[in-house]
Length: 392
Image (cartoon, rainbow, N blue to C red; front, side, top):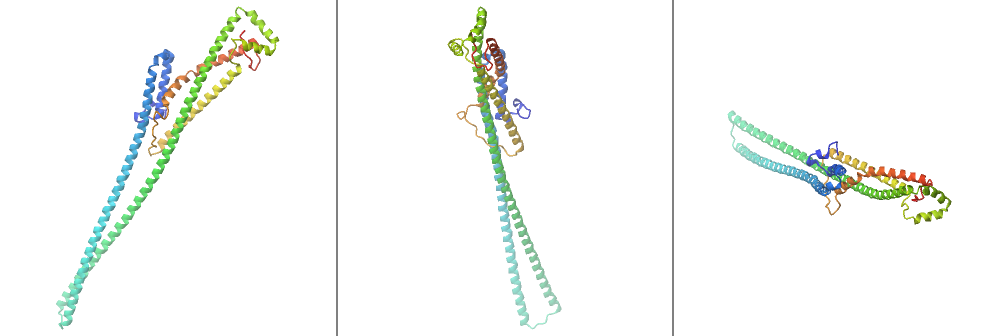
């Protein structure tokens, strides 16, 4: 469970593979309750179907977890391409406008130069006419000539102002174009940085998920190993029950013989007693030290399972924090096909059904050890518990 919310209460679009495992755990616990009440036969046909449904759910959740990420990346890439195309189109239009303005400016400048040349030619002609003719201008004619010169100066002044204004506009357009290019370069650098960050996050998420799956598989293997040990303990317990019944049956009719037998065996040599025990068909098949070793091994395996559960919880919380902190979508992980690995749902489901009997077995094992110690006291075994339990 993540964030205190049950996997069954989450939105379907937000489910992950870990949530499917949590759902499988809940279903396994419900099956355990049904087994405790009605027995294994009640769900023998239902359990494989439920396991198959959970496996299908695991595959679908993996695919749904990948497809939205791919779609978001594709949309982001399309958006960046559209923005880049828009910027290129604007730059192209700007270049066309600058070219048009420059052509207009050149045409106007050429027209002005042509007018200036014409005016200069007319001025020369007038000066030649004045020099060739010795004519005295009147005051009115002189004012008229001055007025024409003044109009020419005003025209030249206006033309110069127009040229200066167009030059300033061209310079402003050039500066704006330079700023646009700088913005484009900054956006490209930012895009490259985001791509690197996204790749790093994908790598981290891939590593974390691989570690989590490895821990889950190791946990399932350890629980399977514990179940095998439980079966061995069950066989030992059944064998011990048979031996105890035989001892109780022999104590009833032959009580005196049993009481005097230890003294006789104490007086016999150790080699004869060992030979007698080895030829006895009802001799025990285990010692107290062997039971202690098995119990110690079971405790170590249980501690390993506990540590693995803590590591899985830690990686789950770390993955949740990474998803909340990052704005980029997580990495795209190709789901493994059924031929690549066995479904984790099936192993997790089976391990839950097996692990439920561990506490019951522990209590039986404690009772077994107590009975063994009691029998050692009755039949005079040594303190280290290395000798066999006599059945006669």
